[in-house]
Length: 77
Image (cartoon, rainbow, N blue to C red; front, side):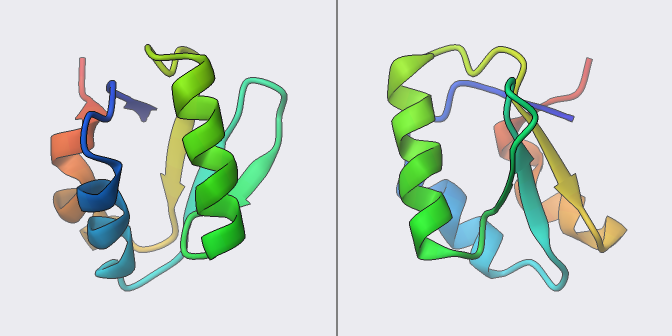
């Protein structure tokens, strides 16, 4: 699923930390960033500030129940 414009990154990363499985950010360039990694979170923040719309960036989760924790940050259309 694609990500909306994340206005409060801290809340997004708090939601990621509560996820049971892995959460990966797939960038436009094809990189896969582990969102539970602090270093990858910094990289993701950089991407967010460079591209405010986060176009072409997607989230993948390994545990389907984690979608509920992240739904406020996702485009579902």
